[in-house]
Image (tube, rainbow, N blue to C red; front, side):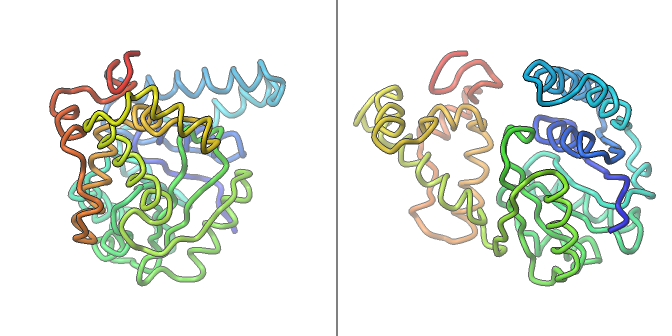
Length: 282
């Protein structure tokens, strides 16, 4: 590979984490977002995260400073015209991703691989609108990106072996473990995880147990590091609802039907950690 410059689109929680791990690994990172305040917030978030690694002794102060120099925030998507590899990490909305991949197909160099951090949306669909379906794949990082080692690599209907190999090699340079998944709604991770979270929410709604009781059972009885309702709050209840809708629409199976309590909480703005209130108060 001759990849030196990485484009990351979206300066939210996932985008800033993805930008950080690439910058730490020695790549120049062009972090793109339409909002200057979001870019400022992302830069501050990355700086705080790197500082924690320095405090733990796993990163030198010089390494932190070098990573920050390699991070280049910008609002102009055309800055990605000379990027060697691009990762999209915008809102989990199919229409928004369609529009972005259509633009990227025209902007990016002809051989550049376009990766999506989507947690559930069809890679085949994004590949088709991009006009380069052989060079589009899923690169689904786990949150928090600087800590979690798994990356789910998703092969679309037309994704080439070469594109998948490039993504695999990039994961290795980041110190991540890549697992390949086929392009079905939710891929592997969320197809297994979201029904569990959804069932935990049904259990709360039906009075089977409190949120605390359900989380305690899963932590102490099943050895999960975090209960499903705590995890749902961490992910964002709106994101959980969006993924469940994709699963329900994609498979047409009632087992993926989002719990009415989840819909009600999202409608009320109780989204978990990011809003200060979900199944728990923050």
